[in-house]
Image (cartoon, rainbow, N blue to C red; front, side):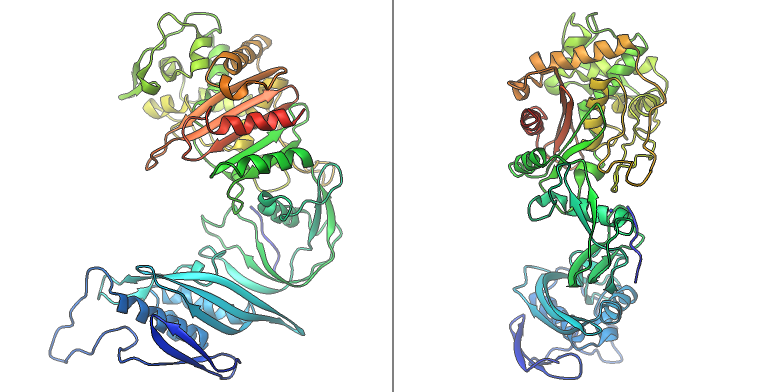
Length: 555
C-alpha cells in the first residue's frame, strides 16, 4: 500500500480545559464531543443588526479570540466534524482534505485533544488516539500546536492552516497513511558489520529512511504495518524521505551494508553535539567511500542535502582555475588590496586588511577576497562553473551515493554575482559532503564520487569528472592548502593533526544573520572532511575544530 517515493488514534467521559473554559467530553460513536461552558459564539463575535454594516476587526488578537478559535477548531476535530473544523481555519479545502484523511487513510480513531497554555497567538496541544488496521491496534501520542490569525477581509480570527497542525512531521502537501508499508524495512550495517541505529547514532535518521526507500525491496525484507508520512509534491517535501511514525507490526528487514566507519561515525556524532547547527562529513579520497556524516540537528541531513553558500572554502576551486589559466602562481606576487570594485559592487577583505607585495600563497592562506575577485575581469562568466563541473564533479545533479543528496551548484553568473561566486557567495551552494569531496579531489588528484553504499550492490553508475587538473596545478594547489594548514587561517585548528595535510577556512555571509556560517575543509593522508557551523562565525574557530578532531580520530 503506497509505494515510497524518493528524494530519502469512544472514550469515557473526561474533563478538559481550553483557555480556562471547563469542557466535558461526552462519549459518542467513534469520537468525543465537547460540552463547553461560555457565552461567546464560535468565532467570538456577536450578530450585527441587519441595517448596520459589519465592522471589520483589526489589530492584535485578544486572548479570548485566540482561545475561542482554538476551542472551536479542536472541539470539531475531536468530535469528527471535519467540515466544521475546516471552517475554523483560513484554508478550509486543505484542512478538510487532511483531516478527512486523518481518519480514512491514517485510520486514527478515539482522538483526545488536550490544549496547553496559550503563548500569544499560539496554542499548543497534545494528541492521544488509537491507530487501527484490520485486527491490529496501537496507541498514538504526540504534541502539536496551532496559531490563530485574523482574516484580512473581515477580521475574523481563524486557525492559520498548515499540515503541521495535524502532525509536526507533516509538510504542506504531505499526508498520513496507515497500512502495509510500501517498502520493507532494512537493517543497515556499518563497514564492519555492526548495526546502525538512530538510538546509537542520532544523526542517521534521514540516512536510514533513505536507505529503506532505495534498498528496502531489493534487500529481501518483508513489509510490516505502519503509520507513515507520505511526502507530497512541494518545495519543502521534495528532498525528504517518507517517514515511519508508528509501527503496528514489524516487518522482516533486509540487510544493506554501508561504508560508514563505526569509530569515525561515533567521533562525528560527538563533535557535532558540542556545537549547535553544525554538520560534518568525511570521505576516503582514494575510493570515495563516505566514512562518517553527522548533524547537530538530526531532523534534516544537512551534511548530504544542505544547500548553503560555502564562503571562502570555494577558493580551493577558484584557485585551481586561476592556476590553470596562469592568472596566479603560488610563489609569485599577487594583488591583495583592501577593496576591489567589480560589476558596480565594492568588495573588501575581512576587517579591510591588505597584503602589500604578497604572494598568491599568502593571499590564499590569509583568505584574501580581493586577490580572487581582482581576477574576475579576466575570466569568462562560465569559467568557474566549468571548473567545478569538469574537474570537481560538482553541480551536474548526477551523484548516486545511495541516499538522497545535493550535488552542489555553481551557476553561470555575470558581473558582481560572478565576482561573488569566486569567493563562495553569489549563487554558489554546497554542503559538507560536497566540500569534503573537494579536498578529497585535491588529495587524490582525481574526482571520485562519494558513496554510502557500494555500486556493486545495485549496479548503479557513479558520477565522474571529464578531466583532471594538470600535474603543475595540482602540485601548487596542494602547496596552498598545506601552507594554510601550517601557517594560515587553518593553523590553529589543524595543530597536531600531522601527516600529509592541507586545509582551507571559510565564512559565508547570509542575509538576516548576525554571524556568518563558518566552514572548514581539509585532508590528512587518505582522509578528507568538511564541516559547517551555521551562524557560527569564522570557520577556523567553529567548524575547524570539528573537522580536525575527526581527522585525528582517523589515526
